Image 1: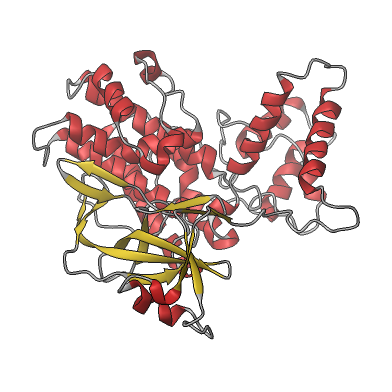
Image 2: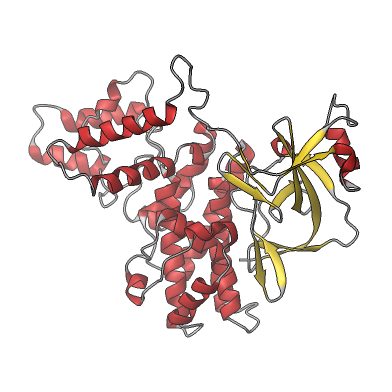
Length: 450
């Protein structure tokens, strides 16, 4: 019922003392339906004395019987999954980032005003809509007061801001060890936020989480909270239910925010749930409205948004664009083919522009390869990109990002948008005159010397 209870975890029987020192799931006794039903019976027996009932509630961490037990096939010890939005973005990432910043400021690494100024001036790229809010000194003792999206954004760009504030070489220093701990949590978050995850990634994540928790408790004694323990059960949740982002509350919270903003302007409070439901359904009807007798063609997805462009006969395209596009235009007479050159397309909410960076290849044995979109063409509603590959120089452990540079000898190539291996474009960040790319929400990890 509460993380402050004597048994705070719904997946295992850990106590308030054990979760702060044990960082491997196999060291805990996991709950299951058989034992849970025994626990429920032990605290719900009608003739049980009050003292015995209270002891059972405290010892088992069970207060009573849940109505969810009546659902056939629903295992309350497994199916009440962890939500990574609250667990990571508003939990572990917030706590770790806050205590890291507090340590840096208290030890004179930089001033809070300078940090806020860097946030204000930092180029967040496509993450700018989640730009973090100003952090006050009082926030360092309580909470950073950021939304889930802002917190994730701040966590990923934090190494760039710190490396910009700390001019000296920090290799081997105390702040470097704490920065590596932060980057280790970012790699944990990347796998948790990833779109595609395998069982092997889940097993690897187990070791990554244990490594992070051991480093975190060594650097920040007495700071660990129950959400850090809940991370231990995340790999098994991935194996049982798939990618964690398919089970998070982010989209539900977005809809909830819409209702909250509407509730503040609705003057009638006689039956506020009815008012909100009526307005919501009316909006859906307007969006689905079409000509009488014609079924709406767009419901879950309104379609790709393609900016107006210029129609160009295929044979008039510049070289080598024509040569790299020909293999993608199957069963098309290139002598009569006309393509449209457009500056921007929006597909499933992701905007692609000239200059956007995309992931081209990501093999385990090689550095990932990124590329810049130089041209966008559309033919029969199929979107093609002309891409100029970057050279991936190295992986920066301090920044948790890949250093890239323009490959002078690289030749442009073409790819259909539907064939991209990663469904979003990426931002280029700058640090000390070099360009870097952060590979967000991907299972790719690199070795960190923590």
